Amino acid sequence: MMINSTDVTFFIFAAYFDSGMLKYFYFLMVLSLYIFIVGINLLLIVVISRNRSLHEPMYIFLCSLFVNGLYGSTGLFPSLLVQILSDVHTVSPTVCFLQMYCLHTYLAVEFLTLTIMSYDRYIAICYPLQYNTRMTADKIATLIAATWLYPLLACIVIIYLNSHSELCGNTIYKVYCDSHSVVKLACSNGYIANMYGLFASFGTISFALVFISYTYLKIVQVCFSGSKQTKQKAVSTCTPHLASLLNFSFGCFFEMLQSRFNMNNVPNMLRIFLSLYFITFQPLFNPVLYGLQMSKIRSICKNLVFGKI
Image 1 (cartoon, rainbow, N blue to C red):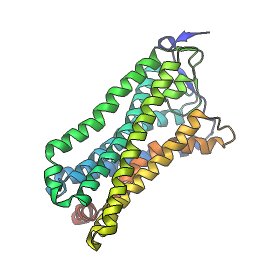
Image 2: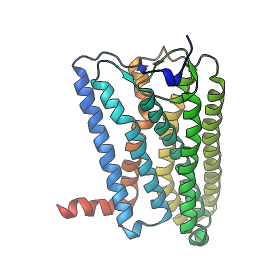
Image 3: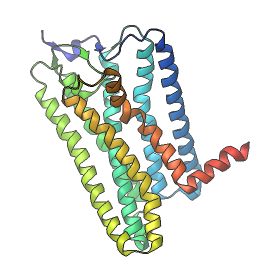
């Protein structure tokens, strides 16, 4: 039977399973992770915003990355915590589409922010004498605005197309809502939503990866012909960026595989863990990585925490 998605009263999350009394353990574990993610990201946002010595392009882009980590984790964790304790794993269409919007915009903002961070490193290492004239306050504001506005506007189209699709079911085989899971429920007119989702996703990711590859190719060329100081600067600032990019790309790659192909031969718990990886571990990975690796941030955090003690 065909029903418009506006007529669906709820969606069912089929990936959840009965864990008995262990659900309270899972709840506390996920809640602790969420509190830690919020705490560490907020700490670094406050540190960067309140210390004038950190009001440089690289740290401002980092701040945007931490804000996005808060945004993405808040789009997932509250719903996840409710579902863990619930005996009936359903969600209203409004909450489902809101979560879908949050998670898709989070993914796009993360990739685009990592892209402009690679551009910042490219200018700093390849054109150090022109860095201040090229990375002006207006240019930084424009780049950050673009990384947020494009996903926020583009994902409105995804929500519109999905919310006006005719559905032949209401079962989502995941622990959260995403566009492709709803597209697979469409009876006949899901083609446009599916093609738009593919175009937007692969277009954004392909642009980001090609641009980042180009900037790092230029950085490597400069390092080979540059001084020891240039090489040290490249290693110290590019290593955390590359680690963050690889970590996020791994999570996204598995999620795309799981969405597009049959993964029934993979154990359910492993599928759930890997499908949540890019949303849960990236907001944890970034602040820990940059907080430990960037000497300025590390020293200010030490003074902030241990100085008061």
